[in-house]
Image (cartoon, rainbow, N blue to C red; front, top):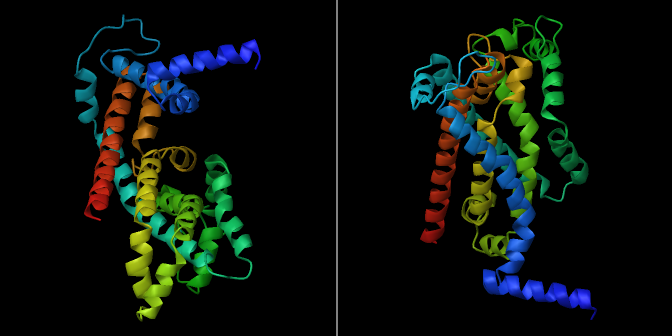
Length: 312
């Protein structure tokens, strides 16, 4: 062993004694991720909290002063912000269960011994690979208004001409559902891969035992598949919920928050307030409120998952 290796081994042993037995490897391996989390998440969020208690406005000749809770009072009293929260909640309530159920169905289907299943897995996962901006632009073309729009043309063909062409992205009743459909289509492949991995982790002996007991496919799904994949499903629900509340790219490209605030979200409202109106402190307050809401939802979901584990 060289002197350099001996020196590094001594440093390693010293750090291991300082950090506790067996904990050095975990800290060493997690170090880069923890550093990135601290640099790109914790520090910016701390700055946002500090700015939210000021009256900072970019380009304003007035001196930045401490404003206390004033920004939070203004944000919570803003109709646009409350509408953005409502749209975020509605989007999550629809997209999370539908996307999760679709991903589970695709995973169970593609787990069968089907001809060309590798090709179908690739096709279903392909939308996840493309950037959301590109997907949104393609869907903007699909949802083009008038009888020449691809979506309108398809619906007219399916309904034998009964469908009247509509402008999906400028209709207050159709704009958000159109974004929901696009988001479900784009993200289902990611959840499908996770669900497929969870399904393949279920022992086949359980299905054989259920079949011997006379359980059909539906009973096997209820009493074997769902219980065994419970943790995977909860993980997908938590991740999908967080991603649903991050809704921004689709809105920015397709509707710019309209029409009549029908598709505005908290992320879009915060970015617009910060850059278009230069009200940085108010945007920071929106970010802090939104962060607390999303973390609260994640904690509740995690609590429910832990209670399910304790029952078993």
